[in-house]
Length: 469
Figure 1: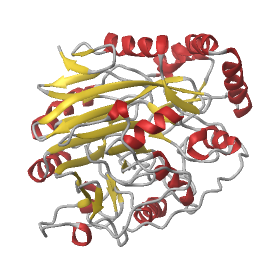
Figure 2: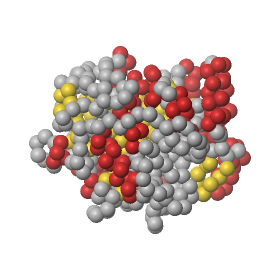
Figure 3: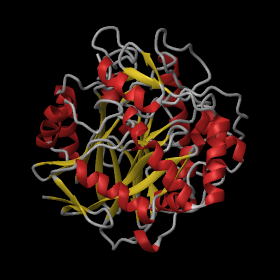
């Protein structure tokens, strides 16, 4: 199909104490309790991480397999990373984009004057609806790749899980030490696939700010320098979800700084805003005449005195959906104004592939409201693929580029045309040594088989294409 011309592209669910204690016997990790959920504190240092990576590179794929086998039990404990270090500062400067103003409001960027939140419109391979394109340092022009080539009339959507650009943690310190920018954290073949997608969406699990104070009593608080947001352009992100339990880690100012930073770069966001109207508003991206609607919300928060504030009519915050009526209303709105609707939900229990009550209760309601595809995040590990009627549900994408642990992960690619979902593919990947890469050979088959084993409602073929049983 005609490609876009763009450089770089444009109370929670806790483990029980008993279960955590059993897990600790398997992993040797120390247990830390925060207000909303229990988390596993990882004591691996950056030096150990990089030594392990060098050893894997020296010994080849067999060593990687042995390393993965040794750590399989750890994957059940979630993906939290608490490795403080003195890594070098990133050198990339924030790029000044073309989307400005309070937010990407329809009044400034829409066509047709109908109040829809249209932020990106591409026709004949060119972007319209804004004054220019986005450049990212070290990025490359999006090109048609043979594996991802699509006929005219089809749109490819790629989704990835949790990312973290906080330099206080191992993932960014390692990238800075390698000195290769985003290529130091994501393998070349995987980057090509992300950049080749018509729309690539990722879960942005932290604020972009150098202001504010960490939330009192919260075990893990994240933030990244505003200039690090240029990595989003470099990896090819078209849209980020801010509906998560870390978007507010350094207070309201940290969330507001994130919104301003993303606006300057021209990167649309969904699931948070300066007020509830903005936080709950769908985003519409149109590619070659096909409009995709995106809605994002988060279940993960304490009901009383939440660490991450929910947006109100007059205050900034995230779009919360433990009480689901607001989310269902937004999904219905998106359904009325688009050809295909994505619901991106932050939900589930960390560190387990077992679905919880709220996921099982809410997924059918979201599908009935009009979502055509439901994508989940938060557990930091992979969870099943299921179906609500004909609507696929990818319950958790797992970590994507988040910490130094060896964890199975993925990207999910949906191909959509005027008739709806044409194909859905689970593409196995591996986060290891502070880097994520596509899985191949035996590793690919192992991850696919794992997904088959935990997904009784879905079939995955040898290339990861998903269908209902």
